[in-house]
Every structure is written in structure tokens, then in C-alpha cells.
Image (tube, rainbow, N blue to C red):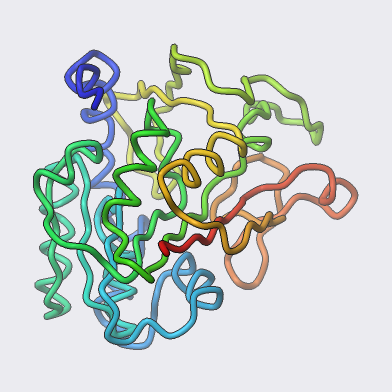
Length: 278
């Protein structure tokens, strides 16, 4: 298993960047943590959407990979699931544990690199869940799929909903309403360097703005999961996003973002894959 890259400059830069995002995401204008804690009926929009696809999870065990500060993980707990979250950021895991304590929810959060997770998390789960904005941070999708599949119990399910690779190839720096390809659609060994002084949530400024990400095509995602021994159940593509990717996107009443109607059918914004283990 290729752990060689784990301590290289890309991983170190990303870890520094994600550690720094935590304070901004925990702030009042970040992930709406106070509402998650104080309102017993409120769950994140991400989980609200995915729960409508996955059905009743009461009593199920869920492993949430790349869980960040755990807001989605703990939303699944509100729906009755027994949750475990993993993330490579010690600051994010500490924040997730603090939110769980405030909510008085019995949740498990594990600090680990995703590729090394089998050495830190035991057992298998009814549902292995990969949320939005996750796989672009991973250089090796085949190993990701093998790790994810290893945690799915026989008869269990795997779910991912993430940014569509066609959308990720668009130039997000334009101020006009043109859909222009700027970045690769297909995977390349060398990552793409981004520099942004603000995160996608909240207004806190980042002193470590650089990050590195990798493109993965739809074929990469689907074939990796099948090669890992999972059986495809359903693949969907969506016109909405959970955040504003382009300056001319429009916010809907459900807090999601869409392209203007004139170009809404031109590019998918997200995809999801539901798979099962025989």
C-alpha cells in the first residue's frame, strides 16, 4: 500500500491548511455549529439530502471518512446511527469530539490518514459514507476504494456524493457567466496547486492559503469501487451544489446552489454512487 507520499510536501501543506480552517469553520459564520448543538431536529443540508437517498439509518453503524469537524457525522447520529468519523487533521478531530460532548452524543472520532485507517479502526460497518468535497484530496483512488470496501460488512452499503469531475475542471475564478474549462478532467500524478485566503465556509482569513488536490474522472471512481469488490447499485448526477463554486450561481431556498437556468443543463455539479458488498 503506497504510504510513501503521506509525509511529503503535498500532505504537509494540506494538513497545515486544513488544521487552520477549523477555527473558521467552528465560528458562528462557519458551519452553524451552535444550531447543530442547540436544535435537536436540525441536521446539515448535506445529510438531509443524503438521508433522502439512503433511507432509515436508525441503529445502523456508519463510518464517515474524511469527516473534518464531524458536523455531518453527528447529523447521522441525530438520525439514530452509531457513528465513527475519521480524519487526518488532529485539530479537526479535537473539534469534532468537542461538538459531540456539547451534544452529549456518543460518537467515535479517530485521527488517521485514510490510507492507514485499517490500522486504527477495527470491524466493519453497515454503511461506509464519503461526504462532499473528499476525494479530490487523495492521490490514489484505487487504494481509497480498497480501504473503503474493507470496512463495508457483507450486505452493507457504500455511499459517496461528491463534486463532479466535469465541474471541477471549470475555471472558478471568472467573474462573467461563461463555463470555461481550465483544469484537467483526467487524473494526473502531479496535483493542482490552489491558493485561497478564505475557505469555502465562513470569512476567517487563512495564513496558510496553499493546498494541493487531484482530479479523478467518473470512470476512476466507478471502476475503483468495482475493482475493490463492491457492486454498483445506482449512479446519479445532480445540478446543485452545497456551496457557491462560481460567482454567478444562484442560492435556492434549501440552501443549495445552482447555475442560472440558461446553462443549468450544460454541466453536472455533483455525482453520487451507491454500492453494496455481496
